[in-house]
Length: 294
Ligand SMILES: NC(=[NH2+])NCCC[C@H](N)C(=O)O
Image 1 (spheres, protein in one colour):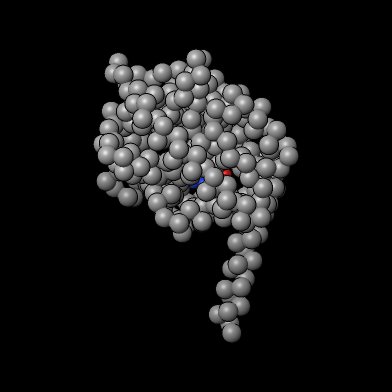
Image 2 (cartoon, rainbow, N blue to C red):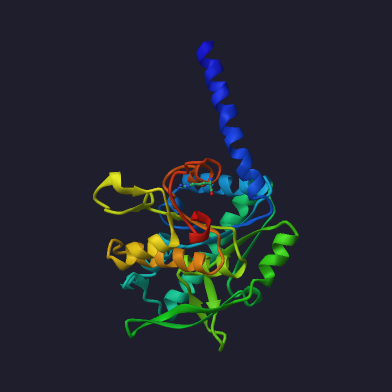
């Protein structure tokens, strides 16, 4: 009995800890980049969608930007093509672009369905809709990698319209160039550009790692919180390698361009978004502006 009471009080404490954040982030835009392993099975998908839906229902304004990742490679494989990557970027010929767009639109609508099932109104669009994401062809170290787009402009009007009408926007990272050709866009880049364009309060990346480490081989060097300047220092001093580098560049660039906080979270961990946003300690890495730290 004693024990039960303790547990019940703990639950109350959790809710009370959330209170200042519910107040602080009320009506604030939170962009969530959803990709990687967090998409790999239905249970993880449902958890992520539940978290985002909860954010919406407590009065935040979440926007989901999603990838297609493994699904795209799977469908490319199904038609007998081999998925090719150059410097981590998918080489996208016309046929691959067609498949990528079909898969991303399918993923998009399945996310919409999951949100709707939880009683929240969602609208799924791609960056083609309403001129949301404008791109030009991207080259990787001078190499032609096909229909991979670099974002040159964002028109967030359609997002503001949806948010105003209380819809939860869900965005597939596809854009058009000035000749109206379709391009695939890296979902991290799309999330970052959108967060900047809407002046998001937060940008949260669901990734396949716990967060940032100073030394990836030493778990005791986990960084729970750092400023944009400190993050740039780590990049400059060569601490950040591989796939993390473009991600962290996106994080600091978001903060330098008006996003208040960026969170790197472990999408494999159920409810990482809630654990980060509604607790003092968080669970991943929070990157804050230099001003906030002062
Ligand atoms: N990784 C961290 N240190 N996170 C702190 C999170 C604090 C607060 N819940 C927020 O969302 O802003």
